[in-house]
Length: 340
Image (tube, rainbow, N blue to C red; front, side, top):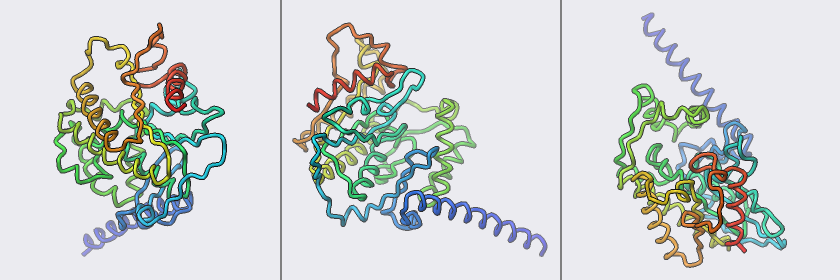
């Protein structure tokens, strides 16, 4: 009898602690976002949580049901400046802070363009589409959308197809994790779609790993297979097509941007890995398909850009993909020519 009481008390205590953390997390986010839809998260599949930046408590609560029934107002901007929204990952924000103080979206800002940058490190087109939907639900609009997602699009293979879960059944990549982390990841994946607190915990855990640059100790991947890359490209296609359809309702010009990396500019002998080459081929096929289906969409493909002068490529990058200040200024100048 005593053991039963101890078990019941322990179970009740754990349940109460979890409830307090969960309710507290939802309450905090509802206060910060002024949106009580977060209390429906996990119960209503149209409600999504977007953690833009955990360290600054920057969250978005997206209600896809509002978008379905919402009449979208097109841009009525009367200013001489064009309003520009940019979306992308770490290559579109202020990265490599020891060698960089800006981003290419920041450098586009001039007398012709007013920039708002919604890019965020480590994010893909799932995140970008959620941000776009959130902006529309808030009644905002723009003249131009720059869609610079590419580098992180294979993250759905590692972390799951949250926005397009039907693709998950076709995923064949095997991740090699230590047993403890594998258990944690499996558990988190199963319940974070229902728990705000676990979603925050997962983001903190992954953010800490990448901030300390120790992800190699935890995640040791095989190279992506052809099937993996095609699935991630299909996820990109679905998200980008939806974003384009929304831009049409906003009457915004839509540009797909693929930024060059260091190996795009310097690898004359095509010595990059098979996986990188396959990703480029598959995603280019996907983007061309999108362009063919949407004639008004423009593609700023910097991966095929060639410098005609003696540009010091090394000074443009702090690693293989992230730009220094000089690199961001250079990218902005090129993109400005396309926009002009």
